[in-house]
Amino acid sequence: MSKNIVLTILGIIVIIGAFFAIRHNENPDIDTSTQYGTDSDGMDMGTTTEVTASSTISVTVPDLLTVKEVTVNGSNFAFDPKTITVNKGDTVKITFKNVGGMHDFKIDEFNVATKKINGGESDTVTFVADKTGSFEYYCSVGTHRQMGMKGTLIVK
Image (cartoon, rainbow, N blue to C red; front, side, top):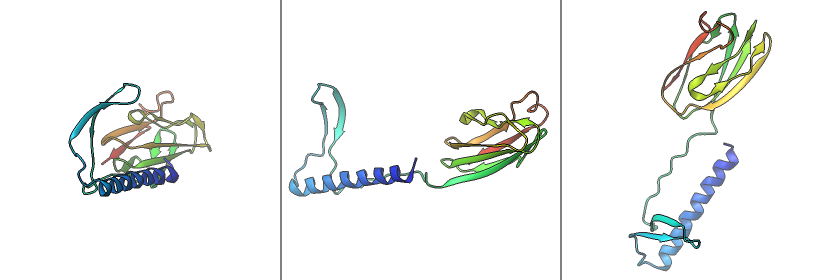
């Protein structure tokens, strides 16, 4: 998500808050009870709750502008580094550099996969680490994984 999208979302939140603040000042007897209704097409809108200016709205915005960048070198049957550690919610950008042979880089749980590339080439993948735990990354070419071409992504 780009910086402009995050700023647009924050701007919309501010505008909505200002709307409710102005509306509250115009009518101090706003009913804050839960209401049920339909929209103009008769679609059930479920429950709605009137919010007053004295209410506190807490919004958690993930830090999408910070990207954890890691370079992983792949050689015959090894990755360097063997362990990558990030925090849950981090946007992770991995540049896979193939030092020799034909290899790729995969993490199944995050649906991450580079192209199969030859020595001297590189490929980059970006994903959000949205679950915690230890996840194996590996090369899927032939029996490279079984021969030790794997590592661990730790998401705290």
